[in-house]
Length: 74
Image (cartoon, rainbow, N blue to C red; front, side):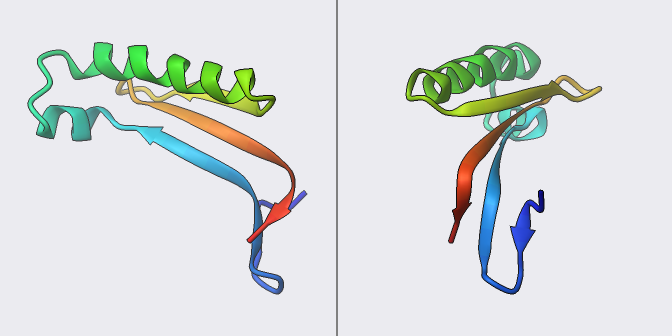
């Protein structure tokens, strides 16, 4: 399953990046804790609405929420 099809201009995946560096740049006191709190909330919201997610944790503490679409969308 391809993530993005250049021929049709459609994709099957959205990745939400909860970035420690961005939180730090915004002046968050504990950026690792902030993204560790935010990412599961976003994942739960997507799942609550019937979506499918895969999450991961980066070595620096950042988080990704991968939202899988049932069909390709533009």
